Image (cartoon, rainbow, N blue to C red; front, side, top):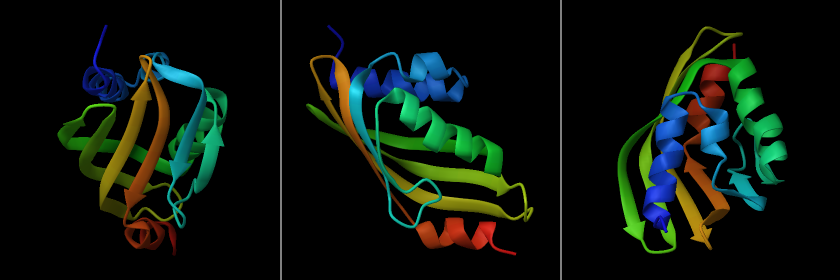
Length: 130
């Protein structure tokens, strides 16, 4: 059985390939996915369909080249922490953005059960404002 660390690493690898099916292969049907208050997709989204519609589709439509660059992955057993940077250009304003971010993953039974994002939402907001 793959470790939580490997499951999260595989998610990020799939993200780098733009492979949405691979990204959600190990995500629980009732995952609780929380984007930080002040972020464009703020809130807790339940289930992969909501996460795809309310997070990834929104980011893809509003931002060009939106990506997370992983700097390091911290193995805490069932809790895995991804640390890195977001990079993107806002489609409407043309402004670029780079913001530090931390993702906290909870994995149990081989599935991602919870995800929580922490980022500098002010930097994201500045890029989206004229």
